[in-house]
Image 1 (tube, rainbow, N blue to C red):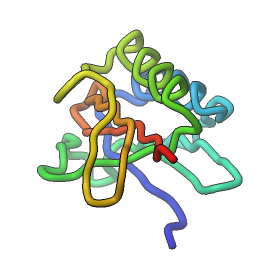
Image 2: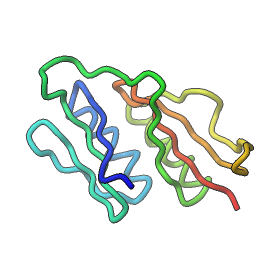
Image 3: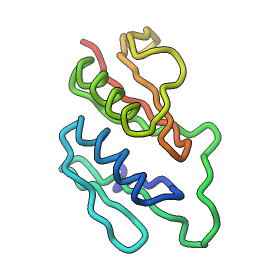
Image 4: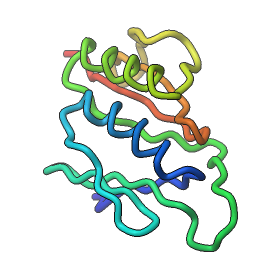
Length: 125
């Protein structure tokens, strides 16, 4: 359904360091810089971080969350730890199991260094 997801950032080098770590925890290789953007290509899609092309500051989307699929709760924990170690901030409840109408989920929430809300999600059997 999606071709790519892109977030706005204010410091491209800081964003690359952060996302190289959190996406690396999910098995993605380092991102590559193309002018004012960084791209992480995977067989499942593309994630990108970009300086706003209008020259204004990047701002956070209120109510927005970008979820990253994790293969296990351990991978979600590694994703979360990589984010915190690289300038992210742990938010909401600590990583753990949540139950809802779609079943059990293992969720880990972060804000990236620019304030974008991210979630590492593992759908439990």
